[in-house]
Image (tube, rainbow, N blue to C red; front, side, top):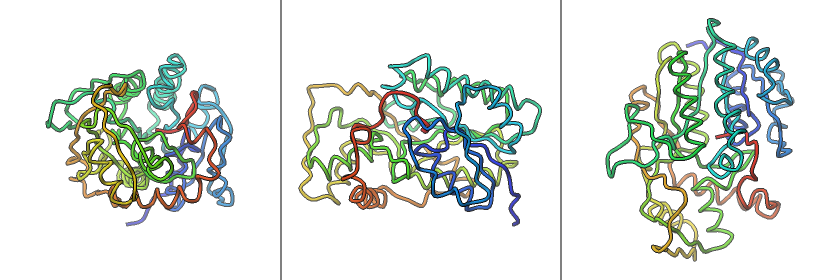
Length: 328
């Protein structure tokens, strides 16, 4: 099957997800334009500067005239720019609304009637607190419990009601990226395992689903190239084998990291109340399946941290500083 070469706009493309998705799209032969504010002074896209199909624009998605021009020039749009996680969104709720929701509102406004392909990443966080062992499907109600989840779900609802966008409800992402994040659960626990050798965990039974970052990039490419077949659809994207509790995840990490001690504290609550399991049957029915499992990702993270831990400053060790983050 011949691939139609497209011009893709990725907002927040220098972030954790974007720096991997950008490479995936370029390797497939597409043209990629990244709009990113680079507030962390990241150099995650330097490796692509020699590619003639890559263009970088240092700018802000809140610049409406710039965003409109770039949308008009693109065949497909992947809006990744976001304020991510509940601490950052709680600290700056108005900014979260502007980036997470209004960006999407503007993209819909700028592309109305212009036959643009839009692939939007929402998050499983929208499911909030699940119901026991009942799997959340694409038909399940969204009950976000954080400003982050609420802004992302509002954007999804707006897109879904006014466009034929393909929407992904991504599981918690893990794995190595040129723009590394250590605040995501698998990345965080693995980091603590090899550096601190000890962790105290609250709410050990809380569950969620997981997906490797390479598989996230793969599903974006798969759906871009099959857009006409699946446009207007919503897909959970995660590992069917990885609806894991915190305890189950930590036990997997302990299989790879010797002398990693875990203490489960039943007296304190985790401020992050997300607790759900997810069905990925719909995305699997398309013939697309993840290639990376949890154990593969843990091994990759251990190797990656050996390279970057000596160089990691407080920005990485503590996860993201508050502010304008460029990824999911």
